[in-house]
Image 1 (tube, rainbow, N blue to C red):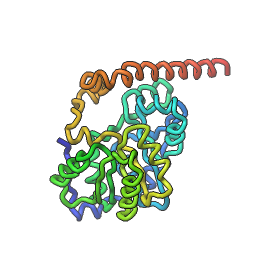
Image 2 (cartoon, one colour):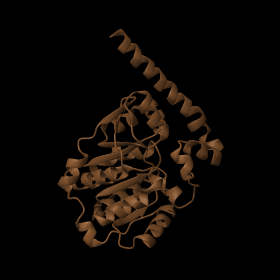
Image 3 (cartoon, one colour):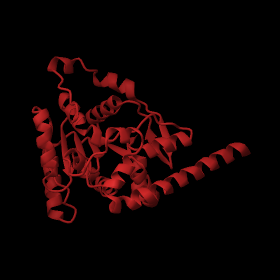
Image 4 (cartoon, rainbow, N blue to C red):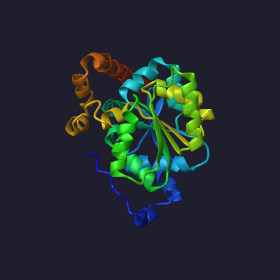
Length: 281
């Protein structure tokens, strides 16, 4: 069970203001992973603060995560690659990316996996008056997750949820977009899976009246126990991929048993090229 803090109003009022947050978190150094800049974020609190900052500033921002699976898709899909390169925040979401950054001499301190802390993030947003909407998952999953969250944080700022089965129904898709625009949440979480969620955001960004667009994957499947969550000790030791493969071997074979070595091979080639260039210079 997640440890979601309940912050009294008096304590919330003493939290750093937006200007203080901006000075603390900006600018952010980035590691270059196959042409995609990944923000060097050392603490989860800094990621939360950055989201709060982006939600309150003028304009629209995009948050994104990078793991080996997403990097592999981006290697073949120029539209996803463009999306990631244009995102305002890209954080590390996998042990494979941490390893790659170290091999490339641009070490990232750690990974952040939303299934570990999404409810904590929602609680943080609620404490600071940041509103949100969740779009994604199978029918009933988002509602179940929201009900679980409401038990822990009754006074929250999640304005609504909707399942993600809208892409084959243009009328329903437009209805959902209109509902989101009526509610005008500060943050829109989109959980269609990669690359559908990123490409959907790219296509509809201009018409969505939100401040932050945040593709979040199948996070609610884990929070609602639809899919078993990796034990903490395996995640902390870079073995989440192994757990997920053991749970769903047929579906995850190509992603992990084929995808992981392919990614590491590309990184190895990049490391050799780096060293060769240094040797020549």
